[in-house]
Length: 348
Image 1 (cartoon, helix red, strand yellow):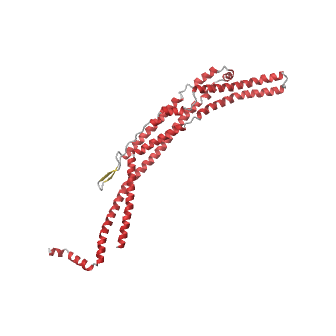
Image 2 (tube, rainbow, N blue to C red):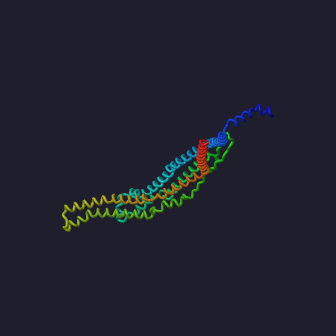
Image 3 (cartoon, rainbow, N blue to C red):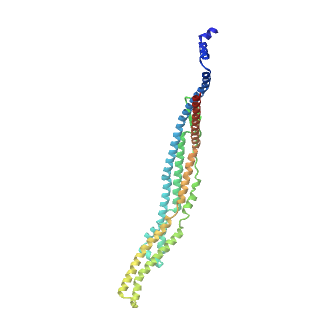
């Protein structure tokens, strides 16, 4: 045993330490030893945090790509579906507004003048029925809404499937070098419901302020009658009134001719001008139909679809954010520990 102790040279080391080191040096060495151990642990912690941050960076980039993709998809939907739907509804209302113009254009000049004399009801009814032979505006709007709602839901389902395919059903961080698989949250396919856009309620909302067909027909007929009557009255007055005044000696012939010409001109102009104003008034009723509520409803539904898509990956999003916060807080605490260690080392 004694020979083994001598061959190990520990005897010389022990003698050197006991005879050479001062008490202060011994105390300093004893204090620095655990401090060095703690610094080694802190260094390992820093390395582990760096590895976790590198692993998480992939998920941070993935989440940014997903969010950016959803933002672009939402803008595309707002243009390709919502805006197109509103434009189609406006065009449907515009075509209905052109009924008055079609009726007026289909009536001959004789038919229009007969209206002022009370004989033109039948030609007007025939012209009105011909213009109203197109599908009812309610059916047309229903077809438009159903088509675009179906398109919106189909695109949303496709986007949801694409998200699932991109992420996988259960995303995980795999660290082969350490043999660690850490589950980081589930994702699910978004489910969408159509109740917020039930066609019947939406159509009623759009068409509730539209003129009723029977009331529109009656209003248009009475407007054309008044215009025609004024034209016939002025035209007839251009001859009868000046003639009566000349015969009665109350008006000179030259003045009577000028008066008659003025009345005839007014009578000739009043018919097309009056019909034009009547048509514009009819169209204005349809053009001013409020579809703002429809636009609000469609955009609210789009917000619902987007929120459902966001919620389908919410566990994944929450993990990325919370794990990032954990790494950040751990790095801050590690910095504090290293600062304390450095301060202690300088004081020893």
